[in-house]
Image (cartoon, rainbow, N blue to C red; front, side, top):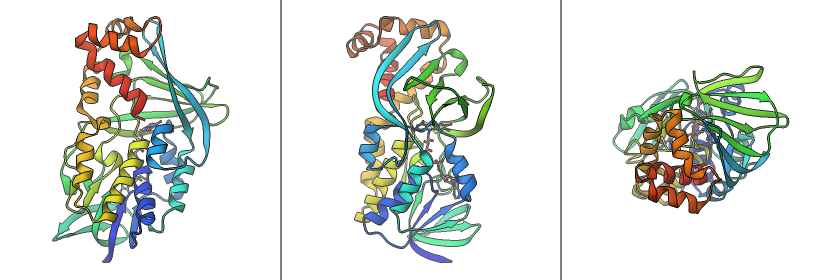
Length: 346
Ligand SMILES: Cc1cc2nc3c(=O)[nH]c(=O)nc-3n(C[C@H](O)[C@H](O)[C@H](O)COP(=O)(O)OP(=O)(O)OC[C@H]3O[C@@H](n4cnc5c(N)ncnc54)[C@H](O)[C@@H]3O)c2cc1C
C-alpha cells in the first residue's frame, strides 16, 4: 500500500490543474494516477474542439502554451437560414501542449494506473488500482465522464451523458466558432471550429450527422446536469467527474481547470471543502437554468427554432436580447441562458 497525502485520479485539464496548483501552494507527497499511456492519452485529449475563452484562461491562470488560432466571434446558424454573430475573445488551444505546460508546473509523482475502486476507511481513502493499492488523506476525482471516484464515493450520476463525435477535416475558417442549430442535432448543434493550419474541427452528437474525408476522428462522452455533492470529507470531484461543463455550449475545459485550481487551494489551506461546495452550488456558471434551457431546447422543431430567432433577424445585440426576453416570457430562460452560456460558459 503506497501511503501519500493526496491522490489525483486523472491527468486531464482538471487533474493537471489540481496537480500544478497543489505544488505551487506547497502541498507535497502528491500522486497523479492516469490510466492511459502517453500515445493514447494524447489521442484521447485531442478529441476536442479546443476552444477556450480568454476570460477562462485568466481565471484559471493557465497558459495555453500554443495557440492554434484566435477566435473573435461565435456565429450561430439556424434552420431557415438566419445567422447571429456574437463577439467573443478566445483561442483554439493545443490542448496537449496546455496539459504539458501544467505538468511542468507540478512536482507530483505521475503513475500509470487505472483506478478500479475506492473506499473510505476512517479519514483515509483506499484505492485499488492496476498498479497496486494507494491510501491518501485527500482524494481528487478528476477522472472524467465515467468517474470511478464519483461512483464509489458519491454514488451519483449526471443527468445526461452525451456521446460526441469530433472530426478533423481539411478546410479553412474566418476565425469564428460556428454552431449550426437544427432539430436534427437533438437539443445541441454541429460545430465547425478552426483548428491547426488548414484544418477544421467538426463535431456533433453521435448519429446526428456525418462528414467525409476525415483526417482523424474520435468520440467521447460529455456529462451534463448538476450532481449535488462534490465534496465528501477529504474527497473532491472536479471537471467532468463533477459534471461542471456548460449544458448549452458544452464548454468544459475552463471550468475543469478552474475547479482543479480551487480544490488545490482548498486542500492547501486545510479547509473542510465547504467553500468549494458553495462555489459549485451558487456560482452562476453552474446554475440549473442552463439545464432547464437545454431541456426546453431539446423538444424544439426547426419551426420553433426559427420562431425563437425572429427577434434577431437583423442581428444580435444585448438590447434586442433584453427586448426578446421581456416580450416572450416563455422563451426568456433560453435567451438568457444562451447569452450567458455562449458568452461566458467556455
Ligand atoms: C468531442 C468533445 C469536444 C469538446 N470540445 C470542447 C471545447 O472546444 N471547449 C471546451 O471548453 N470544452 C470542450 N469539451 C468538453 C471538455 O473536453 C471536457 O469538459 C474536459 O475534458 C473535462 O476535463 P476533465 O479533466 O474533467 O476530464 P477528461 O478530460 O475526461 O480527463 C479525465 C482523465 O482521467 C483519466 N481517467 C479516467 N478514468 C480513470 C481511471 N479509472 N483511472 C485513472 N485515470 C482515469 C482519463 O484517461 C483522462 O486522462 C469537449 C468535449 C467533447 C467530448
